[in-house]
Structures are given as structure tokens and as C-alpha cells.
Amino acid sequence: MTIHQQLLDKILNDNEEYVRSHDLDYFLGHSRGQSPQITMLTCSDSRVSSQIIVQDPVNRVFVIKNIGNQVATCEGSLDYGIYHLKTPLLLIVGHTDCGAVKARIKGVRGEPRTIRRELLSLPTYSVESLQDTDYDQLVRENVLNNIRYQVKIATGKYQELIQKDELRVVGAYYDFRNDLGQGWGRVVLV
Ligand SMILES: [Zn+2]
Image (tube, protein in one colour):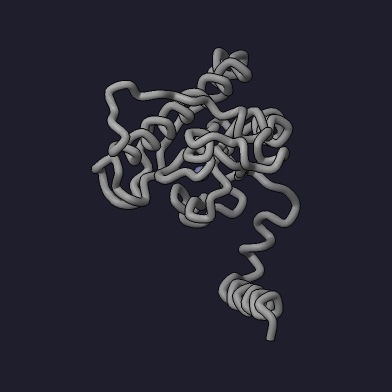
């Protein structure tokens, strides 16, 4: 059996389990429309899921993922969550060990054009007091800086709604490695 067939079998098996564990009422509850209260912009990294903030994110979290959790590369999707679904909260979540941030630090020259374009819209942030050995800290500071940067862009973009108190934009750092010392898996507001 090929890896693809194995994966497809696993998908269908897991879906079978999902179907079995949810009754009709569960699906009827959201069968005619969605009513999420949170728009979550986060990184495509497979270690980051909306389940880190809501146990069952179905119909609760409008999730947008891209490399580096960037506003610039998903404005249409963001606008959909904010203007059409009118979620009162936009949560922008960066994370530990972000590959996009690491690639931006390293330099994007070797990347294909499409990936390069998306990485170049990430900010760079040099930490002068750091030695080369503090690479993890350099990444961490750049992740934090990127979260603040994306929040700033979103705050400018949606300032009318924010002024009317219809929207709040909040940044967060998902720390699955306890880099911030507040616990493994902790979501820390930035
Ligand atoms: Zn990432």
C-alpha cells in the first residue's frame, strides 16, 4: 500500500470515528450558517491548532493560517471574518520555533519565488545584545516582534471598528516548548 493510500485510509477511518462521536443535534446547530466569535490568524505550522484556545473550535473560531501568521498575505480572508462574520475579537497567534521567522532571519535567497514573496513581508528585528549562541532567544524575540507588528497592522486596518468598540485585536504567543517560562503549551498574551 502506498503512503498516499495509507493516509487516505487513515483520514476516512478518523472521519468515521468523528461521525460516530457526534449526534445529529451537533450538526444541526451549525448546518445553516456559521457564527464564530473569534477570528484567529495563526501560522500554518502543524503544531498550532485552534484547539489550543477553544476545546471544540467548530463554529466558534474562524481560522486563517499562513506562514508567519501575517496580515499582508491573507487580507481578504481576514476581512471576511471581521466585516462579514463580525467577530468581536481578532486573535493573532505566533508561536515557538516558527520556521517562517527562522527563514526570514537566515535569509530567503534559496527559496522559490512564491515562498520568498511571503517571507519577505515578515519584519526583521535584530537584537544587538545577543551573541550568536543565543539563537533560540533571537528567534523568540523575532516571533514576539512579528506578533506586535501584525497586531499593529491589523489595528490600523480596522481602526474604525476598534474605535467603536466593535473589535479588539490581540496578539498572543503559543509556547509549546516553555520558552517563556510560563508553562508548556501556554498561550501568552503579547
Ligand atoms: Zn510558524
